[in-house]
Length: 329
Image 1 (spheres, rainbow, N blue to C red):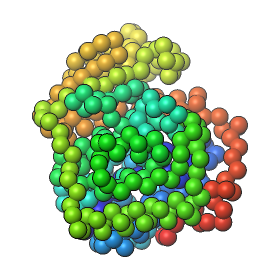
Image 2: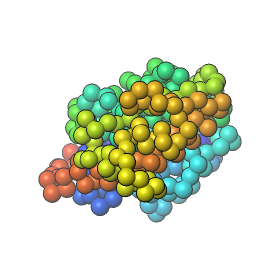
Image 3: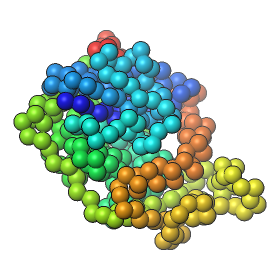
Image 4: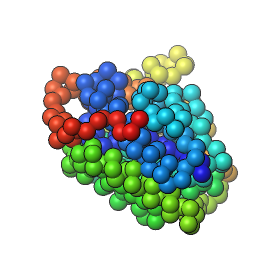
């Protein structure tokens, strides 16, 4: 069995603040190792469940978080922003199943740890009218290739949101969301054991009965609610947007103005744009292209405005409790 693992970071064991998920911030070095540990637990469980070939796609931030030396020796790692499929670099129809590791709740989720959908600029994404997070965007993607989703790990709110869409797959809860920057966490020894067992069980279930893929009506309509000045995402956001476009334009641009001007989308309100594609993969890649207009701006904002590295203090002993950060290399 060929298994594909897409791994994000906000839903990884123990993560709860911006200071832990971006290069150069004080908690990052520890949590990039824990990210590898969650992945390695899934890889080991998949092997025990019968997997013969496993590809891991680093799918967070600039997508170079996991160091090659930290990855399980029986898995291949795909990294970097140069990719066709946003969180699925290296994916193709030849895989027998997909695991979603470290996933988080969608934008706007009350008290969801670091909840968002790809970037802060995306306030809501709707596929054929259905509001979804990354679990949905990627669930429809793998299903459009005829590949079933076998497992998802993350916090309780993510699992609660994903279950009605993804259905009867394996879910592994590694923490409970208590706020945007606060969670109740399992010790690594327990979360890694749960991930390993969940992956093993998922593949064994798959061997007996292939899970169904998600249905999506074609053509597919994507609606995207974008940020506006009033929510104070970025100071002087409309002026900031001038800095990130190629044109030497004197015009201040809202996010919706920018996208409507530069991309083939329809304006459907002050902050909403939409487009239609005949294939889901094209709809997904179009959204990836739209994201690129705001990606650097939004990450810069998170690192420089939201993160407070000088105030970061966290006792990680209850989380680590003598366990290795990186499970089963």
